[in-house]
Image (cartoon, rainbow, N blue to C red):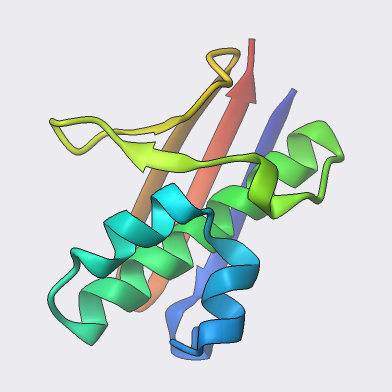
Length: 102
């Protein structure tokens, strides 16, 4: 199965309730390491797109079940779900994610 999603970053808000709705504790730790609001919006928008892409591939809308983290080289992976491959990008005011379940 494949899932894909795109997010308009101008619609992302850095409110505590939205952050807690989308990000797991591990993701929130990575989010806090982003130094500017622009980088935080890109991170949050990318994770939102990732969670929606996961939902489209799995039909599981429990966003907090999936932690989309970064390896030391910056590539994203889904913790505890090696069967799901993911790619995230953000540029020009959008974020996009694609997942593939193997």
